[in-house]
Length: 102
Image (cartoon, rainbow, N blue to C red; front, side, top):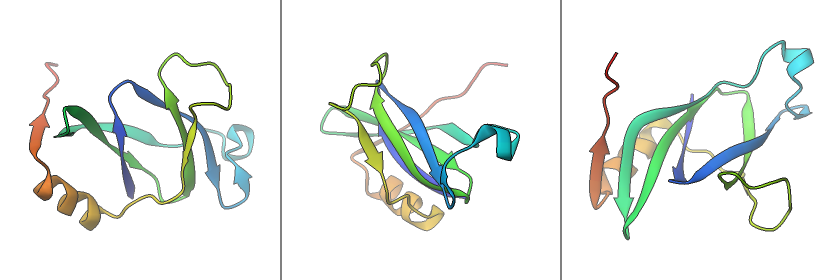
């Protein structure tokens, strides 16, 4: 698995794998991208930890509710390992956990 942190209020867009853009027809499913119940606070900003499958190379992120306009979009090219995510969590100013009430 790979990981990345995403600012509160931002969402994922297009996804790339080794063959180019993720093709749901070829894969017969959407890419596995999960927001975990952990977030860190840095400079009064919440950064959520996301987990993605190894096949994912890059992910487009954008402010939530934004249309597909190029301004304001970012492509995450460097996803991090579990060890790097743990290190970032340990170094954070503040760590928040959220539990769902099932």
